[in-house]
Amino acid sequence: MGAGHTHPLYRASGSPVHRLPPEVKIAAMVTFTLAVVATPREALWAFGAYALLVAAVAAAARVGPGWLLRRSLIELPFVLFAFALPFLGAGERVEFLGLRLSEDGLYGAWNILAKGTLGVLASLLLAATTTTRDLIVGLDRLRCPQILTQIATFMLRYLEVLVGEARRMRVARMSRGDDPRFVWQLRGFAAGVGALFLRAYERGERVYLAMLSRGYSGRMPVVWQGGGAATAGQWAVAATVPAVAAAVAATALALT
Image (cartoon, rainbow, N blue to C red; front, side):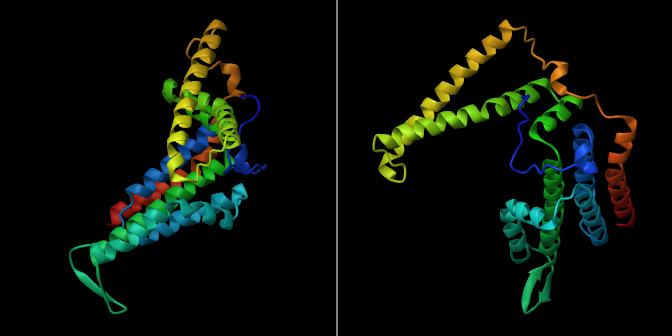
């Protein structure tokens, strides 16, 4: 873990958002998302305010809009479903460009599109400013169940090992004339996946026994977490965005 594992979404930078402890960023992202979800779909102005908050955080984190838009394409299936709702929804119909669209379907499509996009953008900003290791450390400091953080830690630590093992098995198959592009060779591919699972399981057993022999007690050592937890000032800085989002949501609920 000391090697500094990162993920493809992480963007190294010295921005103020990058320097914040991971636990405050995780808490801020979750609180912001909950505020967005709690906002009535009819409060269109509120979603504009949320978009401005996301843009402000992206600017502070030095994450460009093009990068965010390209990565947000992961929600494309939900967007396609949202566009179908005005045609499939029931209730009163409205005329638009010669089409009779469902009013409830329009609101439903807007609800999915707006809330889903804001949630994806908030998650992308968290991933872009926090390494995978720091995410696990932040979850541990937030008292996430130890079993979850340990599983995530081991997965992060040995994922590259398993990927390398799978690559070597693939090279061995190809050197023996196997070509997984052909349908009739899927059986061999499935057998390889099963062998990889058994190897991973056996290696995990050996690693776990080795850890027990070195004093592992079921909890990651404190020294692994690096620096100290967030200060009150850092919590206050990170709470700015979710506090504004909560105020916007409360106002929208009161006006609806």
